Length: 177
Image 1 (cartoon, rainbow, N blue to C red):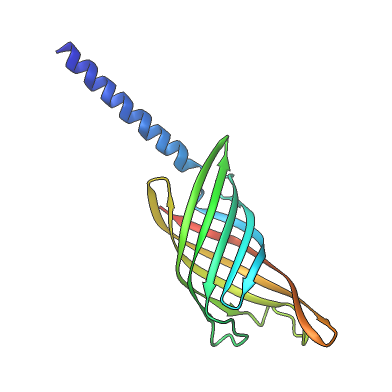
Image 2: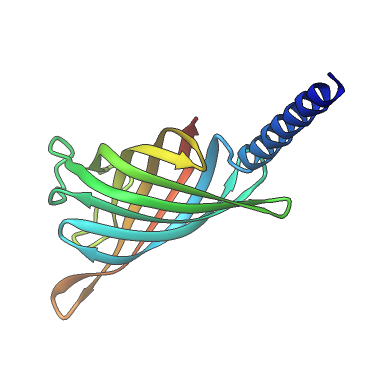
């Protein structure tokens, strides 16, 4: 009888320890993040971005997003469709590093004339709104990646050249587990 009680107490203690560890890991992921980053690679059908962010719970985030899409349009009535891609991130809080992964499941990339320059070769701003399936440890959920993508452009030798691209969003990443 005493041996059975000890086994039960040990099992309950182990379960509580696992639950506390899961809560500690979970606490490192905020429900929302303000994000900023740069585009490090681009083709007509895919953009790769890296950046950092701050979570609503005070944690810090580093992230990489690869966003597949149909061709971009400067007509707001015909946005590009997000066709896939991935999100890889890590949250850091109080000595704990918590990984986060995601897959883009849909969304749009829409030209924003109100935020874009009116100049012939001025900056172009696009509203990126992507839906995500996300996972952190054994927890799964959904999320959104909502950022402004700015193509920084200059006229050079009669041609309009995009020389850099940045992203920012507040909140730019929202998660629900």
